[in-house]
Amino acid sequence: MGNVRRDVKAAVAGIALVAMLAGCGGGAREGRTAPPFQLEDAKGTNVKLADLRDHAVLVAFWAPWAGPCRLSLPQWNRLHRKYVKQGLAVVAITVLDDAHAAPKALKEAGVSFTALTGTDAVMKAYLGRKEITLPVLFILNGRGRIVRRIAGFQRAEDLEPDVARALATCPKSGGN
Image 1 (tube, helix red, strand yellow):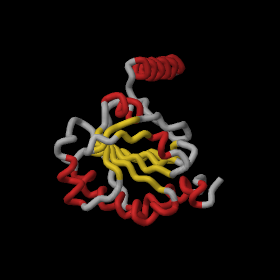
Image 2 (cartoon, rainbow, N blue to C red):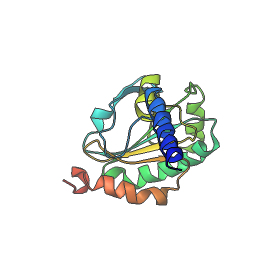
Image 3 (tube, rainbow, N blue to C red):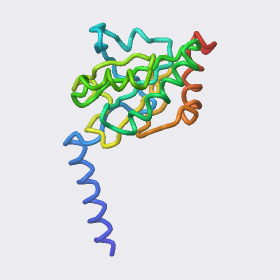
């Protein structure tokens, strides 16, 4: 019985090592500094994450063809409208070569937050491997650290505690 346990432990460790070396998983993690990015919006204007320093930032990776993403747009817009004066910036990054379909989806949802076109490098830095569930959200505090990483549809009110925690570090909202 002892040999079986040892063999199972060795097999699990081997699988974990192979997965790590193969680049499975990875991406940005809670508690770490968010990877920098510079991306274009639909008008060709460059937006840098560094320009949002001292703001809480909700970075949302989404695709216009994904139902949960389309349902999420009004939720993110609600957060944007409610907390923008306190220092929240919402940035939606389109993934999977769907930049051409994004403007229509954004217009239909009536969003007023920043929407950018993603690149492979930014997606790899944040998502690591290809995510199965979209959208993927990163809530950053005013120091650029990831407070929360969430996959899938979330209602605005379910995100508010993490947004409040991120805003607490922003000078505009009275944080330090």
